[in-house]
Image (cartoon, rainbow over all chains, first blue to last red; front, side, top):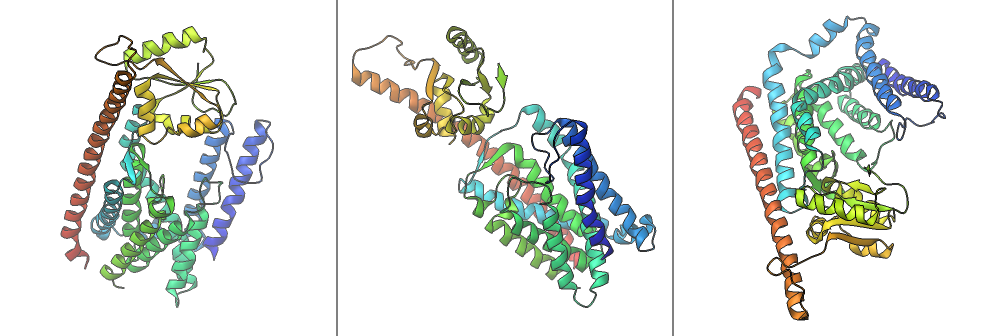
Length: 264
Length: 160
């Protein structure tokens, strides 16, 4: 339960950081984690506080369980499996999203429309690969390497309960800050479930990192060029194509694929 | 001139043009109409302009020409009925003129036919542009899917 306690401390630290930044600008305290409409310093500062807090949890947790961070994460990232599992996960996620987006494109529920300035989307495409890999790695270190591993140690007899709890924590963590959409929650739970199953079946973070990075790569790669036209409950929207009914079904299929091919 | 969002009420919104001729016509029109305080929206932000107009954020909206207005409608972002409901006045910097004969005519049938011609040309141009975008998207998605499938075929026996 050490990891969950560490994770619970994160929003408190993030809120304290937000409060200090707001007060420095002479702005009133906000009870929610919400930087909307705040000066750029507050928004950027809030992001930095969030990243530092999450990285601190990733570094501190192994020390709390009596291991060095290097040794702890080396055991979760075995170099013997890096190519196969990373490529396998990324390919599966890309294939699944290509099928989903292709279907929406063919039925007119997704239309091609460049809605970002050229300079912005070119910069995003150049940074796409490192952003996807780094983003996926940090989230996997935290939610699978720390939270899921801790829950599996706490509940070794009932690993699927640990999967369910870790998936729920993963989803809730995406809504700690004020967000535009809340209907995407079931999609986040299902995505968390897939990544937790991938970790549980492989005892390694490479497969979840591959799945996660492949998803980010596709979603962020097409984002500047398309608009969703279908009903959001069916197709998802914005950066959440996995959160519509069909997207969730796709995540179920991917989870079955992982369970079948990585029989524990 | 301001750019970007429009939370204020009243005033003039302008959909900027990307073609030089349209840009010049728009600029001359805005100077004539004394719209120095107009808020600019780029064509990529048509959804934001539509939302601002539907919410009654502006009294007037200026387009470079009829094609610019119609392109927004074809894209699904021009809810003209809702703009009318909140009293937005639509203005065109260049009024619609038939490409063949710019001379005015008194024949209502000819006027109608020319107006339909302008609309059809606009729709055909937009369809062509959309089709090109869809073909590019389909090619990219297919290439990525095939690449991913090849990787899976190569890796599955190893993974099993």
